[in-house]
Length: 254
Ligand code: ADP
Ligand code: MG
Ligand code: MG
Image 1 (cartoon, helix red, strand yellow):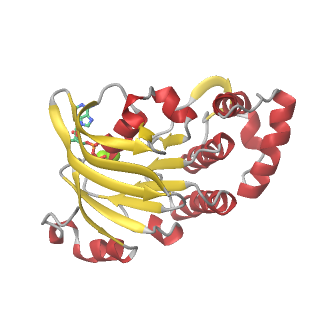
Image 2 (cartoon, rainbow, N blue to C red):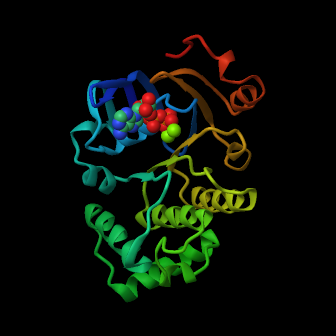
């Protein structure tokens, strides 16, 4: 079934119109890549979806799991299984990563009507997840992102996604600033999570086709000036890589 349906979405920031009638439909378990030049509105889309207060929705609709996403508070969206990874994950000095992950996990569990986990129970919960995703347990004892490399921050986000058991993950430029080994590690963790949670859907926002060698998208959308102007399969990203954005000038979307 459909997890997310974006229809004619228009949004602005500081009275500047950014999204201009964007359509996107995502089914459970699918990976959608969204590509487009800097400034076309990719991050704006992700922020509007998670309910960032700086962005104003001017028109259109967003249906998430059959309900109106736009009337939910950001926190409620997260509790409902929507997850946004940040382009530049921040350090949270002095906050232990295990405590951070446990809070995130428990907020989601409460929303699902599940019991909250105490520190010992959480340790028992997260340990097999670390093994499954092949993430070093020493991540847990560090402070949130403090001294983490770019790749470690991104892997920690995949870990957060896993403990929150989110249903739709939006990964905004998860590849930015990563060397090839770090990129492979992050992609591996995400792929392992996808195999474990087959109905999880992913929106991968990226400039580069390279990421898509490691996480194969079911659909690729090209975004331009606030709309998806073309949709295709994984081959569309290769076409884009070889021919550049200029070859996708016309509006060919839905
Ligand atoms: P992308 O992620 O595709 O590079 P963005 O969504 O970040 O694009 O930006 C789309 C447009 O919105 C750009 O022209 C950018 O300058 C503008 N924009 C984004 N965030 C803000 C903001 N906080 N204030 C003013 N303009 C913004
Ligand atoms: Mg940008
Ligand atoms: Mg961006």
